Amino acid sequence: MLNFLVTFIPRAIMQGIPLLYGSTGEILTEKSGNLNLGIPGIMYMGAISSVIGAFYYETFRTSMNPILAVLIPLVCCLLGSFLTGLLYCFLTVSLRANQNVTGLAITTFGVGFGNFFGGSLIKLSNAEVPAIVLGGTSGYIKTTLPFANTTGWFGQVFLSYGFLAYLAIIIALVASYVLKRTRVGLHLRAVGESPATADAAGINVVKYKYVATCVGSMIAGLGGLYYVLDYSNGIWSHNAFGDRGWLAIALVIFTIWRPSVSILASILFGGLYILYLYIPTGTEMAIKEIYKMFPYVITLLVLIIVSLRKKREDQPPMSLGLPYFREER
Image 1 (cartoon, rainbow, N blue to C red):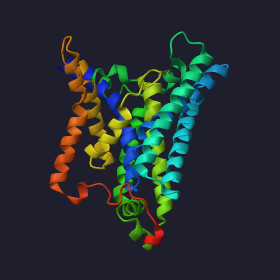
Image 2 (cartoon, one colour):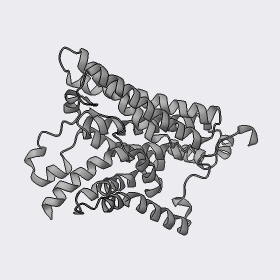
Image 3 (tube, rainbow, N blue to C red):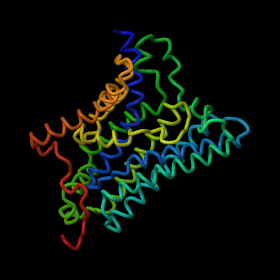
Image 4 (spheres, helix red, strand yellow):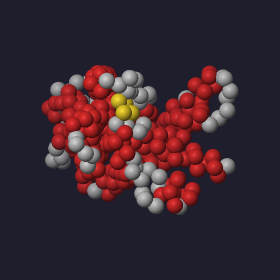
């Protein structure tokens, strides 16, 4: 049993880290009243932007510098996801476009953008297989603590991850603190609950929506970077993300819009996502597909329970998904 847990838990955590980035970013966005269904596309944008930066650095460099090998894809990821979030804000906040339609369009755009430029890089690299391998950059990003291998099962379960895994936890805790304990968090929650009231109180609604959505997009983009350059060992291939972006959005509902809860919930979702690999099913592929449904089934159950309880603190922001027209105030 111990051997199973020591093997299973690290894989569940690694599966859950992209979900944690995505859900944390989406929680910040939704707290401002913006419903961004473009998170899957933004994670793709963050991933392909980091891949482009790492690819050209590995191609034209004379020797690998550890700092630049980490910094270049990180900056490219943040820039790509920031611009995508900015586009979403311009369409939904400034132009007041429908948030649901815009989010789905962003997802389609991000996936298409990633596959197009990923395919272009594959052709440039003259690879024999339809994939890009960035082993040098991935090696630096995956670097673990030097004493992780000397502490037995404890090190394998808690210390055997790259810095991006611990950064995801730190960001979630900081986001939770900001939302609950700071004036900025209070203003952000006020904007999400009632932008008209917040505006009347002198809070810049547009600024808070822009900042929360763009910062949330940058955080979600880090999930794409982590998946490609850490979890996948620097290998990019078409449609490699699967449905992880949608799982991150489902995780927001599961955690009842609380970033701190997302830490354990993302590990749970990560474990459920790979559970079918550890349950013997023989050749019954249909049963494996049923096991893959577990995260979504649990999310639906939580949504039903929360709806029945009808506690205000467990509900989404009241203005979520609704455009704000100041002249209607």
